Image (cartoon, rainbow, N blue to C red; front, side, top):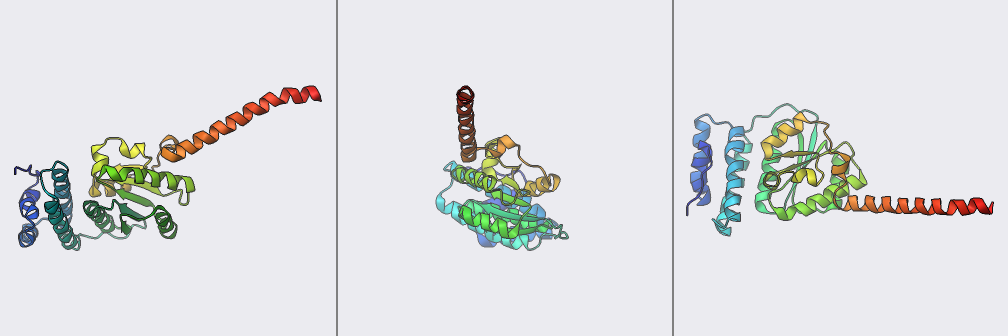
Length: 260
């Protein structure tokens, strides 16, 4: 089986033992990289994330099996725990982020890496994972009052639920200053998707998510972007109803004047 290899040296050395599920060899790659001077941040952004995306890509293209995907993803997550513990920590910046993701194992890993990078950057971070019902998301938002809600996703199947959630959050407007950022492979592969579903911000990966959030602390989606999906239909229906009522009022007014 011929597999494409990531461009970075770290990723090249890590990919083969990861796909083989060789835990000892993967840890040896990590230890060697640290000994050679690689930072935890470089390993998170130049090895763990790109290799994660490559493994998912190979699975979507039927180039690896489900068992290989599971071995690689779970081992990658174990290595991520070890590497993230060595990330350099910046002072607290007073900002809070709440992070969710799709329910599949690879998406959980993407959400975890994103959470680790935000936390290391000084954000107060909560990572709730995937499969959380909308009403519980709303409850968490109300309790935590985050500056930023991050939705990590890699699979097309998760987009409708993210779109529905964004509509729901716009409709109830419980935390109007909160920004929504969509992050991950599906939003990178489908250009403009994050805008289409009403997100305020977009990032292709966890490292860029931190950068984008820091560079755009108040950017919000336009009104048109915020009225996608169900909310748009509701508002259009309300507008049609109001227009119809106005027409009826105009029609009845001349008769009322004649009667007077």
